[in-house]
Image 1 (cartoon, each protein chain N blue to C red):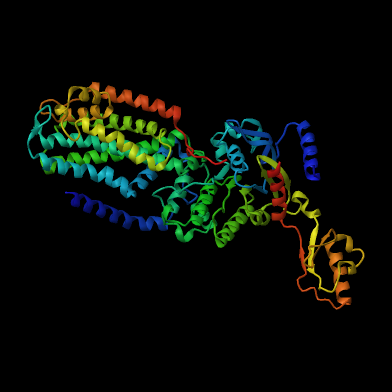
Image 2: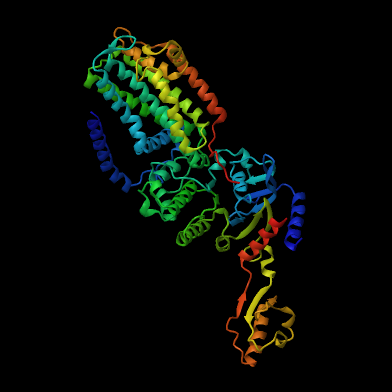
Length: 327
Length: 295
């Protein structure tokens, strides 16, 4: 058991003793379980999302992301556990609660036969105090498409219309279920700009995604779900002990230079793959790069393919989710 | 005739589009001064929903053809086929027979066929689910969509009556108008309820059209809509009497029989019974989420 899991368990135990729970959180989940028949889709999930933060919920397809989102959004009943969203149990949510929550579902087609502006007019009518329609269209960057029928928009534009529909009621909390799946890179950039805009409005956002760069770019905090369980939780920098993971320093030694000729303190860190390519697993990359550089310069060596690789969020994620599959 | 209707419709659309330009420059509901429909009460919300559902319906080419145009096409064809022969159990002129019969078809096309198809497509496409995520009561959505279907149904019926009157000289006695209106309204409501019920049994958007046609076409055939059912064997006539199509057609036919008219309460009772059954199934089985779900 790694340190993250340990600290999670400790946190869970202390939290369980302190009542009442989730009063100051936008979302508070404890021991959530969901079965479909005999299949356990989600097991013992704990989550806490604070007001005003962007929380990314990561996991491979089929890991249980959508199940959790739909339980939180009041579309599915849970099998066990406690859930509070804006202080309310979503299973018994009323119109007042729906007035405060916006939801962008994973697969939803536009309203048939209505233009972008008409869709927003329709939805604005559902809320007590809707946002201004033209401003909301501008927020998602659909000004030029305002009079276009929803079904004539591109996939990316339809998702942006979805986001606009979720925003029109001026909600405090917004669920975004895989908002950029299937987007081309430029469409993803503009979707990110929209989400940044929501952050600026002070909204709390619960975002599911399977793109690491998206989570890293947008999220204040991240939880990773795999096989229906939370396997790690943290900020993009600290998730899965990323900040404490070794940095790989890679280079190729010239044929006439042996591993034993490296400075003494680097030798125990070095591994050679048989083709002259050396990797140093470093906890102090800055210091070790400098030592390596000094050593190479003193000998007139160039090390042209020198590469310093800090663990990316993707490395962490793959480690976390692979480890899960093997169990 | 059809060309005339299409021409009138196009003119209407052009006029509306011409009017639409200035209103879209000054967005109405986005100005903070105007209160949202939800804040003006539930009736305002139902009318708000109806307004947009109606607009969406009018933009759907397929829906427009099958509900507004097809009954007229069939009227022209059937009257053309049978000329001014006297047909049916009451020996009326072919035109007098087909105007009310195809009015029943028009009512069913607008409230049942169209509704089942659009409901299933909207449910499977996640449109209904997204609407349910908003703070709008479920019954408002259902009332708005049903009201739309009923408006379309009554409008088509009126067009058919007018065409019958002016093109074929089929007279509807003024005393029969309340009976026709009542029968059409009860029939529309009943077929709306049945549409909500049937949509619960169809689990894919592309299955809706064949499924609904497989139900209505045989019923049209045995219920005296396409051919007078006096020619049918007795058992088939009795079978047809179990279903609502026969009773809607019968109620409307009756109003046109010279010297009779009036409401056929037994027909209305059967329609109401089917409405109750449809409503019960809809309340029990109706879902807002697609039949296929992701984990």
